Picture (tube, rainbow, N blue to C red):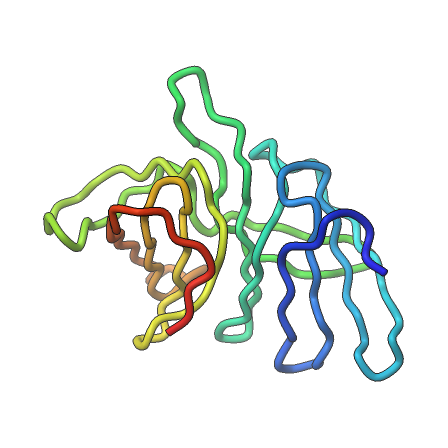
Length: 170
């Protein structure tokens, strides 16, 4: 049993535990589930700096990333808070480090120009055929590609897709 409305679930390839998020729109919850024993370990999130909850998770290059969903927008309708965080679990707590801000600079893959993102609906995570982390910003109808996420070599590009997407897989 997982408290709240569960939306994100991924298996950690190193521990084989299932990481589960719930309440993606606010008051987020986090747990791991051991599929062998069925035991559930709950973790607490800090107060979300973006005002919402947390959605999908993705394991990549020894790190775990999480989408910061349902952000509170500023008075101009902009997201100036984290859209993707790196997450670690320690001592019963989820520890977060921003990886991609909602208003980050990116290269538009269609216009071949620098743009400022406004990620109002960070939703799901996956990777593409190059191994880049891919964020679906659902209501924004954008795919955001993060090469080398969480490193000094991180670069970001965005592809507007013209319609809302959800959970993508390459």
